[in-house]
Image: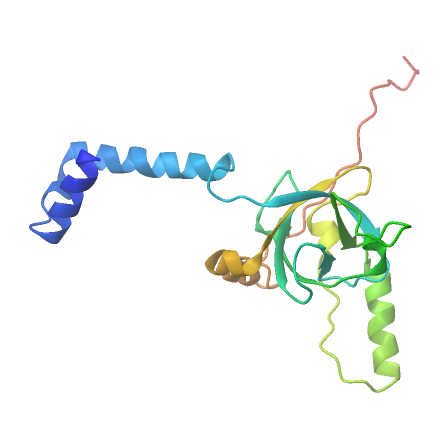
Length: 197
């Protein structure tokens, strides 16, 4: 607290203490602490849930029952390889969120499992009917970007309005010209040798 008051007073006055080694070290230690807190989830907190697929959702859509419909939702899956894995999706309620008794399933997030074949079929159907659209076949689908499968994977989500700058950065980073090249998911290696041992 003393260093904070000292630096604040200096910034309002002569601005000479910022050049001293002690203040540089204190500021560096503070920034490292902030990054550590973000990395271990003390600062940015996301809700989590197990994902289940839905054919009712298109690429770019997600269903989280505790978030209002049509809200933008930040979502990611660990391990987080690069900014390609942070998706900004539109929240859309679908039937797959419901249990047999009609209540919302708890602890789940419904995601699209759309592949390129389905996306292309939808685009072709729209064009065949002469309907104007802004659909595109992305370089990677959301499922590919997050390396999703449905064997118990969980994703983290947050309302995009909570993090407007983070959301803007994610949208910018995921434009085709700014995104990382797709990450190739390697085939899992066998523990067995060719002779069966």
